[in-house]
Image (cartoon, rainbow, N blue to C red; front, top):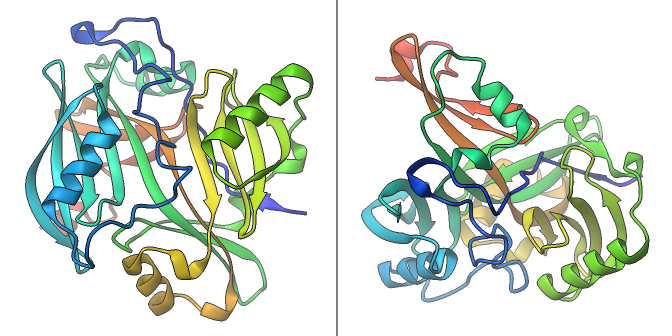
Length: 312
């Protein structure tokens, strides 16, 4: 039985207007987690990369939706990276990209109305009203490795080779449990997926039960199996595309070879997922959450065992 790591993806509306008159991003703009899915990860320039390559990656990603300006350069795991501010109608978000043009986290300000009912329910646990919402498209590389007990764990790396997450077997969902989609809808989604993702064969179209209006399109290519959460308007909110281990960005490959048991690596994928970043005032201090569409909190800024030491 095949298993995939499914994060909860986020449905995007296109008509509502929220704070500062900002409209949610239209599904057909270039601002989409799967913008580069057909061509795969970027491999431009020399090994060190450059500011120009990073700026080009930002322009291609945001298109006319927002304007990104690089504000600083930093080193992450020995990889040259650039931080950028993202301006959309005077509202600011942030983005990070490597000097080779590989995306890490791409933020854009959105309307509060973009929140799904599940995300809004979580945000409304606190008395403080939601003042702003940032959509965060988190890009990465997922390496499945078997444990000593022969169980699959999925390790998520970012483009700089940093480990960002680990999912245990208990957190992997059986895609066989999802009901199938058929008829014209399945045919349309199959056509859309085959246009967006290169050299694939679609295996199944399944209902994304946690994401109303979206489906999970599972597919395969010569390197393995992947999937995408998408709707009939061609909005892809999360995806995984299989690739060869040798084709990973050098920082990711080095990190995986250094930290993992190489003989236990079974699959490699690259992809992206969309989350909501919501800051709120709680107990007199700002608390920032990354929330999935079903309301689950993926990350919270106060998550620390010994805050007084770890903040130093």
